[in-house]
Image (cartoon, rainbow, N blue to C red):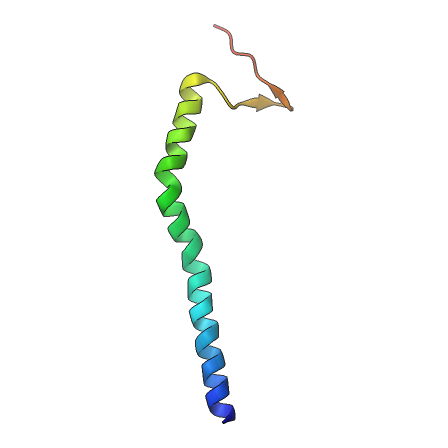
Length: 60
């Protein structure tokens, strides 16, 4: 009975570890294009940038 419990505990631990490690990687892969588009839009428009808590004024 103890051997089965220990084996089950190890199995659950390793399955949980796999999910814990692979879930953030999957989230970053799926959200990468969306985040890139937001950064690109901010670079084009000059919005969203701050210097020491104040919004930076852009001039040409």
